[in-house]
Image (cartoon, rainbow, N blue to C red; front, side, top):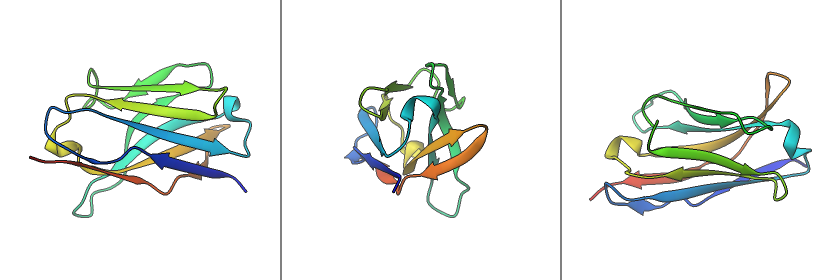
Length: 117
């Protein structure tokens, strides 16, 4: 059974850093475009944070450009999100997603990131 398991969420002060990880099992990882999405409290819609193709091409939401970096290690079936200079508005549940052939294939269960002093 395919699983995406996120880790690394935590409480951090504004200006701090976190690194999220998402480990994938039972898939041919390198063919999937992997992405990080987030859903803030108060019923906001889930939004794209960053994606990275199997070949390493990345894409970012404007709100995180210059602060967040997505990367992947195809030998470990893992995608990462390095988050620097975190702001309170980055507070959300962060989800990992795997896409193939232009379609959504799998979601992870999410990891909570809280930015607060």
